[in-house]
Amino acid sequence: MASRGGATRPNGPNAGNKICQFKLVLLGESAVGKSSLVLRFVKGQFHEFQESTIGAAFLTQTVCLDDTTVKFEIWDTAGQERYHSLAPMYYRGAQAAIVVYDITNEQRSFQRMSRRLLGLAADGTGAWI
Image (cartoon, rainbow, N blue to C red; front, side, top):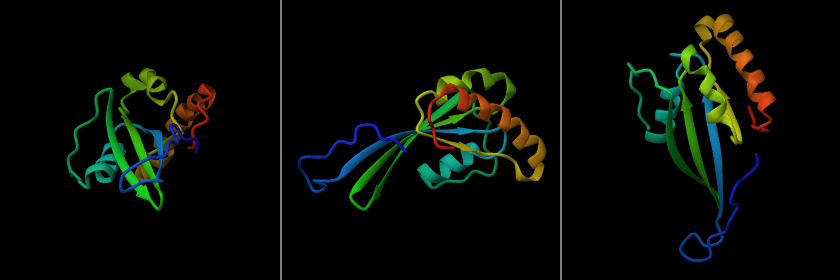
């Protein structure tokens, strides 16, 4: 993964900590669990009846690993067909992408994502998938 801003804090209790910032995008069809995964990671919450994302949702999470602080900028994209044309705007510049699909309807869900992954690869972001 590439990092942006690999700066070191000069002072304070975490002096010497490396700070990495990553743009992470979640891709997948509607109602496959993208928002549930993000809410669990960021807020430790799970809602059995999660409303569909409209457009995209932006959340952040900071994780400390040894001497490194990792700041995630997370884009949770809408899965409905009408929002697919907006996806490149969200994954442009991303260092990583998580593809989420429905294992109970794997063939349809994953095949549709395969087409979108081609778009991600063609964008040349260099994101880890």
